[in-house]
Structures are given as structure tokens and as C-alpha cells.
Length: 179
Image 1 (cartoon, rainbow, N blue to C red):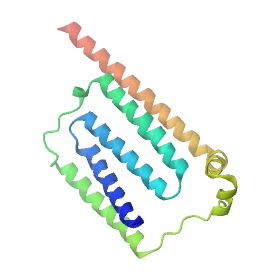
Image 2: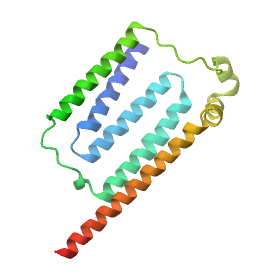
Image 3: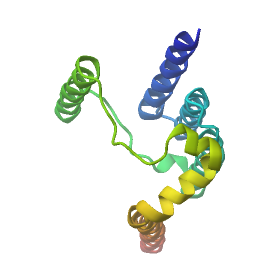
Image 4: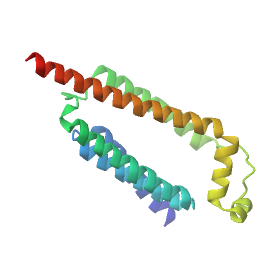
């Protein structure tokens, strides 16, 4: 039963991911993203990682999707670039590249058992200290530099979006003044 449920949730997640990419309506794309995030949270629950599942729902499904919808409403959904056809040389190349990548990953997964790096966090230690404490200890000791780099990267992205929105607004205002 567990494996069948996994494949159903995984299929929902993949279909929702394709919905994010191929929807022409930005709001529908954001809703597909919400479904994808919720399906991933269910997969985390199935892996007995309740903290990550709740964080997935609160942070990604709650905050990020709402932020996307606010940005879409702020900038206007009609500002998106109209796509006449998905069948271009660039998209065909990217699809072929994706097939090659998936083939290599599939071969690695199905022909060899992939071993992760051995860590200090055994199931007994997680049971004794708790998931949240173990994740926090790992993030703020072993992975503090990557954690801070992600924060800087996200800050730069937010600053870039605000700057681009202001430039676009300034260009629209200049165009209206010239008319």
C-alpha cells in the first residue's frame, strides 16, 4: 500500500511540476506550484520527516506561493511574454539534454545502490534529541556557510526583482510622458 501511495503522490508532483511550466496563465501556474509543494510535503511525511513536511507547507506552500501571487498581481499578469509555440530548436535541445540527464540518473539509481555520506546522526540520536534539534545543529555548525550563502543569494534576488520592477515602471512612465 505504501509503495502505491508513493507512486500516486510522485505522479501528482510531477504532473503539477509540468503544470507550472506549461500553463499560460500565471495564476494557474502558481496554483500548480502549490499542488507540487503540498505533494512534496506528503512525501516528507511518508519519509517520517514531519518537521520538514510542516516546514514545506508553511514556508513554501504558504509563504512563497503567496509571494508569487502578490508579485503577479503587483506587476500585472499581462506583462508575461507571449509564447507562440513551444516547438523551437532551443526547446528541442533542452528536452534532449533532459532525457540524457534523466537516463544517466536513472541508470545510476537502478544499477547501483547509491550510498549517502555517513553522518553522525543515527536514528537513535534523532530519537533522543529530536528532528528539529538535529537539523538546527547541522545547519548552524556544519552547514553555516552554505546556509548564509543561500540567504545572500535570496537577498540579491529580491533586490534584483525590485530594481527590475522599478526600471520597468520608470520606462512605462517615460513612454506615457513621450506620448
